Amino acid sequence: MAIESPSDYRNLLLQTLAALDLQAVDRLVELFLETREKGGNIYTFGNGGSGATATHAAGDFLKGASYGLDKRFKMICLNDNLPALMAIANDIGYDDIFVEPLKNYLGPGDLAIGISGSGNSQNVVKALEFAKARGVRTVAMCGFKGGKIKEIADLAIHAEVMDMEVTEDVHMAVFNMVKKVVMARLLGDKPSMGGIYDARING
Image 1 (cartoon, one colour):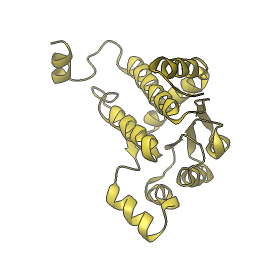
Image 2 (tube, one colour):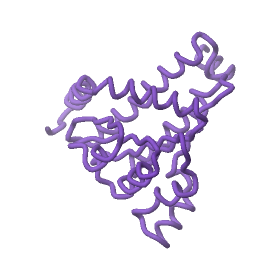
Image 3 (cartoon, one colour):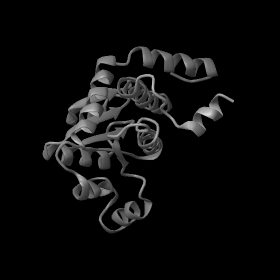
Image 4 (tube, helix red, strand yellow):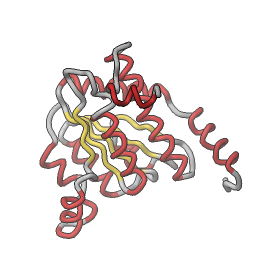
């Protein structure tokens, strides 16, 4: 579908969100909560826009979803350590930029979330295969036809649309859904973001 106007894009985004499997998103909420309860780490990783989504989500759970909690979310974005990423890509290969740090970090009770619009980014495929082989629960966030990671992962969040930008928007929306539900479950009516934040948004 050619996007020739803002309304075309909006309509495609709304159609894709309407078709989203919310039971899969509910399961992702439970995986976040279960991983936190076990004291496990949550790893996110992706390339390009998907890498930006991985970073954004990790930041949200480091601060927003953890503020005020004694037991916090331990969420690490594997594409945030640029020197390590470049060294691995240069000395070993770009396909290994996520699997190599997982070899350092991965432990029982962890959760690995690989993000790839096509579902076929080889470095994401390789990392999810590694995590799954070691008994760690895996999540694929994909678009288009789902690609290889949809078949590998224990849970797939699939934006069923042949458009990269809409796929990226849906993936970020899913992380925001999870964050909001998790905060409601864990914090209830307690202040959640911090006094400075509350003062800023309330004027």
